[in-house]
Length: 148
Ligand SMILES: [Zn+2]
Image 1 (cartoon, rainbow, N blue to C red):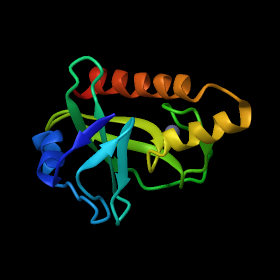
Image 2 (tube, rainbow, N blue to C red):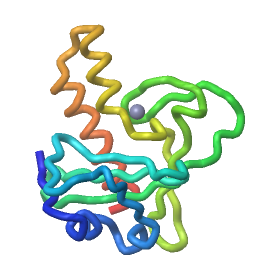
Image 3 (tube, rainbow, N blue to C red):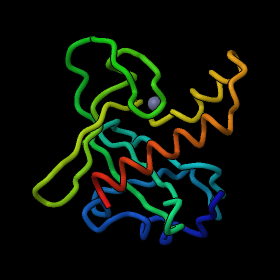
Image 4 (cartoon, protein in one colour):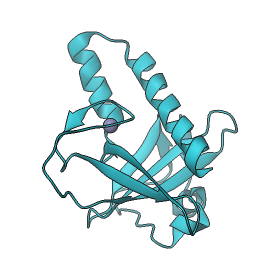
């Protein structure tokens, strides 16, 4: 669980490379208490944003992902929650690692991975907190390996 006091603090979570494009929806009210991570998709659908706490440094990190356009209607697999879905639900999300390098990963376009795992746990009886820890580990690994 982490807390974000205001919009300025939320903006500061993002790297300078992402701050220019950041669109914070009006429905987000502060102070904001976040259990595992915060994610939203901008109104145009072109970008998806993620805010998460790094388990090692406890620093809150934000990433802006560009959504590739849903080209061919194929079934894909989210690399974080392992859900499957059509290209309108799961697609290639691309983040800038620097001004010359981008990194792509197939994910739920709205990053609703946590909600999907909670639904799965209700159906299968799997431990919700264990699934959440696994998901948070995959997110942290990606951020560490590719972006931070
Ligand atoms: Zn997912």
